[in-house]
Length: 254
Ligand code: MF3
Ligand code: CO
Image 1 (cartoon, rainbow, N blue to C red):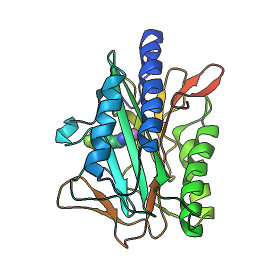
Image 2: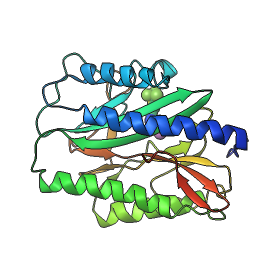
Image 3: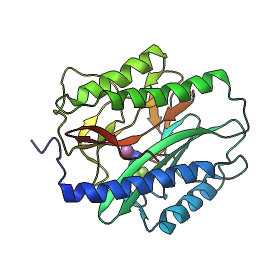
């Protein structure tokens, strides 16, 4: 069996902090550029410019052949949506921007979902967005050195279940830092296994993907775009956290 978690060195953590902070700034600048009338191709171009203007490289571009600077997932698209010259963002859409930045040999990864339009935000959409973000925050709060990965999963699951949102099972959070995807998995639901113990120097991406309908999803023929089976909208929020001796730090807040 391979390694089931990674403890980063102080030197790695210094670089991971920088990459994560750049990613957080890029995520917010990209999200501010979401406007009805633009295509997801336009948004992806802007994202590439923002990331490169900071001196970073878009991590996702060409990752396993991924054809875009960032992932842009609209409405019933859950994650891994690909830029398209014919996909216009419309008033009332929700748009997830999932951003990876590589800098100085380290990787940042985070995401948020925003409402495109002038509002008022429909009530069910508001619940989807705020409860998914709350699930992320509760997951982070549950992450303590000496605890286990399952503590995070349980906290996310509790919020999702209380809000009656479907929890995507096929895609999960993950270790991160030097490579985009490192062990361990960080599921948004609980299993019998506790998962690895949370230890100082572990960097984890916590990323609930919650649906207004059922948990069921499928992958489009493009091989990337994940959509809900029932066509209901889906939200995605992601932060990168560092476990330390003195508590848990969120590396992707601005
Ligand atoms: N942020 C995503 C993740 O956490 C997505 C990247 S998949 C890619 O896994 F292929 F687009 F890079
Ligand atoms: Co991720």
